[in-house]
Image: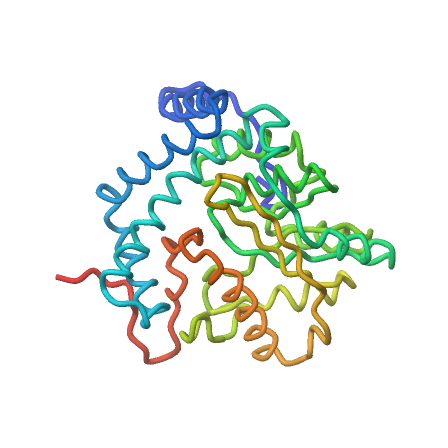
Length: 310
């Protein structure tokens, strides 16, 4: 299959190996019908299970938090790990209600700041590259954003082809378009048409097309895509964060466009992007996806961080 093509339905999805996925999808659809507080309660329970059962992911989160928050004592770091895993559980239920719940389920449960920056870029005939990151609130944020403006996003296909198909089918009900991560041509086209597209460069994709730039003070392999896409798409770059507040409502924040970006210096640009993402994460660090091995790729000669201790 063409790597740029969206997932497609295939008759093999009816075979027994996909039956567990069908049951999981049925569970999501049932949960999507429940009130939001009930979804949160189920999500917290799933997070509790994850904490005790998903030991490898818990170790990754422990390592990341120890590296990035050395100012916290052991007890505070332990609490943040528990909060991170709990939020990962909640995010599953948030995705269910965002993807398969009623259209207006989140309409009265959010605030949005900074939409004027997207409008200003559009008025100038320029696209907006929404500089995001992997918060656990990505799906409700996407649903909420679509209430206010055309929503375009980049995505990576799930390795489970049935789940990949069902996820994108659900998202396309409210997104204006979903672009496969590798389809750079389509991304550039949308930006040159004056559209706003969500893009998250905060994961470790190896040394190719990356430079090492500090993230929470740790050298991290950082893709150069933000600067290059902005330049090719003739787009402004707007920081974009989204959080779940303590009252169960959501807050979306669009920042002002970056000035003098890209600068032409890859390391300087990557460092600037990582600092912006770091500042967004520090607002609610427990809602960031710390279970990802962000520091997997190390500079030459440096040992890895994620080896299992014996």
